[in-house]
Amino acid sequence: MGLSALGPARFWRVGDRELRLEAPVIAGILNVTPDSFSDGGRFEQPRRAIARGRQIAEEGAAILDIGAESTRPGADPVPEGEEWARLEPVLRGLRDLPIPISVDTHKLEVAERAVEAGAAAINDVTGLRAEPGLARLAARTGVGLVLMHMRGTPRTMQLDTTYGDIAAEVGGALAEARRAALDAGCAPGQIAVDPGIGFGKSVDGNLELLARLDEIASLGAPVWIGPSRKSFLGALLGVGPAERVTASVAACLAAARRGADVLRVHDVREMRQALEVERAINAGRAGGVRDARPFVRPRAAGDCN
Ligand code: HH2
Image (cartoon, rainbow, N blue to C red):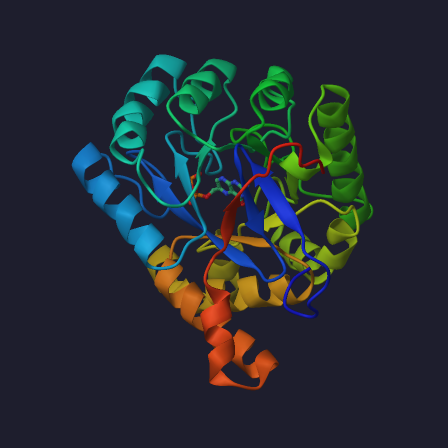
């Protein structure tokens, strides 16, 4: 729904809870990797990662998105044993977190273990291309499923970034992936989509996708968007990842106005402040800010989507 209008209640189903999406919510990024493009190496130690996860929840994120394998351009795949060894202590340490945790993985075994350890959603940057079994896992367990568009793999994705009509091609691929998830038994309300900013796209391709995000939103699924600190912002402004915070907030607000529901960001505090100001202006009063708290409700028995 984005920032433009308050429509009827919309939810994203994540396990035994539902996230209210009349206004955009924040997914805070926690990368427990040595080599992520922005926060690589900062949260490799479980103690630090757990502290950052708690901070992300306190700063106002509605979801914590944890990744243990970098997907930056050129990144090498991580064996699943190593990916799980990075994730497990952090998931266990954050079991009592008040907000749902999504795990950014495309490996079935890692996803299965993560769900057993309490993850409420799986964020699959391959959109079921690497592992169609992820849809069956989501159907069986009820966890949320994010289907992202990527061309090729992180190693190959920037080799060819030309498209005919980028929004139509990406939207078509996401519609197909969503259909495959539904065929595997997922409920429509479980499935979110993401056009994959920076994954096999040129600078102009990313900008066009953001400009035409309403076309992706017209698929009817909750829309995730992840421009945070990415290189297209560096190409526009000539600054490194740490100096792309304001640009990331601006990109997310522009995306939210065009229908993004879940803003995947590194800088939760800054994003939250921007959303609060925009929402207070839309409400025409400061009191509207209180309504901006992320809202998670338990799913009622027999609820359907
Ligand atoms: N971007 C990254 C990773 N996962 N998932 C979704 N749904 N959307 C995204 O845009 C997205 C994603 C890459 O960013 P980051 O996690 O910060 O870096 P790295 O892959 O180097 O760990």
